[in-house]
Image 1: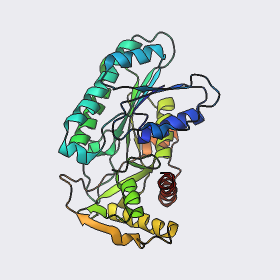
Image 2: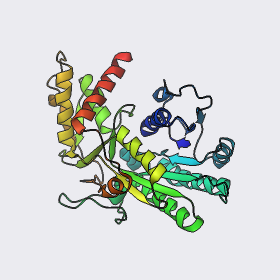
Image 3: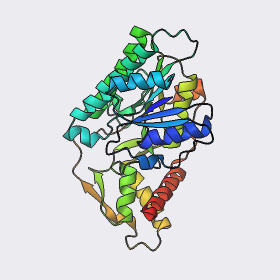
Image 4: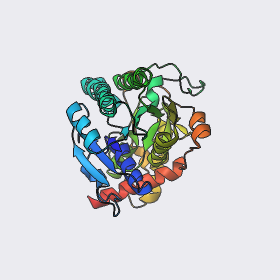
Length: 335
């Protein structure tokens, strides 16, 4: 397998999951090591006794020569594409890297796969899996049903638009060239190894240090929360059993306002840090000017992946947040 973006948050968790649960496979990890990717995320990988089970390659998904060489030399038959620029705020202040990585990078990988794999006469399935986002559907009204696969796209931010474009490219390569490809659209992930610009790790790190906990606007923006381990299990299920050309929604099924989520985290911090001078941590919450084009609500209908592939999330939100908090507390003590 080739995993792109495997030094990032979801990618590093996926690499660990694959090496731990699929001893028969080898994993090549291609990552550009931008600000959100780190080799520290890959320390202590469970490679076991299998020689050559894991290889890290520092490189850019836009480098087609490199990608084609890796596919050929490593005998890649599965590509799981996670490499992306993902932070909405950064896409608003500087959209160019999002267009380059998320659109041009996806195109480069698709072309490399198409040209390197060519006519598949070996009998071995060769699959391209692209990881997308719930943000491609745009903002939902409070009482609107969660979108199902095939719902119209209405991206708001440059980030969401770049992911929507990548989704359409993948679909076009399925229909035009017969590429065996699948897509998963996921909700907000949380868990260990997430770069602290995203909501949950930012709130945890700031609260531990007594810094303000900034929440956009009135804090009533609603998101669905998915533990990264549940997401990894869903990706593997889709890669192994999903149908060619299909999109599958992956979500935790638990929607909370941003304010509710941060207040829950503060309560967990209060319990974990009884001697903290910043208790109650809720007092650190402060409202800041809202983000441009801030979508009010995201949600996904996961009926398809539940019924077709038998996947469902295992982590309850409170339990998953507690485990995530413990990981960050441990990381803080180690530094």
